[in-house]
Image (cartoon, rainbow, N blue to C red):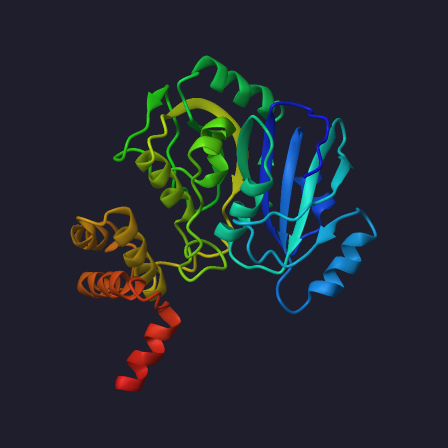
Length: 312
C-alpha cells in the first residue's frame, strides 16, 4: 500500500454506492485523510468508472478476497474549500454496506478511524474533537459521539455525559457516530457482518452488530457528549415503514444480537411497535419468529414470501 503524508491522526472511512468520490468528499466536508470505498454495481461498472476517471485517478478491480489479499490502490488528493485531504479511493463491483466498510478497514492507516456514509456532513474540526476524546480517555478503544440527526426517524439519544458502554446501552448508535483506535483493531480485528445493512440480505443492523462484536472481543468502549456529524434521515435508504419486511429482518437481527433470549424480544417488539404498525401484535411476533428462523439458512424476506405464496 502506498504511503501518503497525514493531515491528522484521524482517518475517515467512507462507504458509498455509485457516487462521484470528489463530489461526496466535498459534500460531507472531509477535513482529514480518508479511505473512500465506492461500490459501482455489477452491470454498469465500466460506464461509471469512465465518468469518474475524468476527475480523479483511481484503481478499480473486483475485490474478491479482500480479507486475504489487498490490492494496491493509488493515492489521490481532493481539494475542499479549506483543506487538502490525502486519501485512497477503492472502486469495486461488490454490493452491501458491511462489505464496503470492511474494505475501508483493510485500507486504513490512520491512528483513529471514523466511519462515515455519503449522506453525512462532518462537523468543523471533527478531527481535533475525536483526537482529543481518545487522548482524554486513553483506555478507550471505541468511542461513540453525538450526532445531529434530522428527520422523522430519530433512533438515537443524545449523549449527556461521559459513560462506559456495555451490552445494555451500546445498541443505540449508528456507524457514523463511532470511531475506533486503529492499534486495537490491528491486534484484535473486528469486521462488519456482511449479511446486514443496506444492499444486504437483511436491511439494517450492521452497525449494532459491529459494536456488539467489539464488546465481545474485549474492546473498552465509551460515549462522550461531543457532536461530530449531522445526518439527514428524512429519506432512508432502507426503511419503508413498520411493515412485514421490517419485522422479518428485525427477527434475524435480534437472533444475532441476543442469541440466548431473542425469543423474548419478539414480545418486546410487539409491545413497542404495536401502535406504530398496522400489523397485529401476533403478526409482528410471527414475522420476527420467521426472520430468526430464516437467518439460520440466510433466507431473505422476498424468498420467504414466495415460499409462503406457493403454499397457499
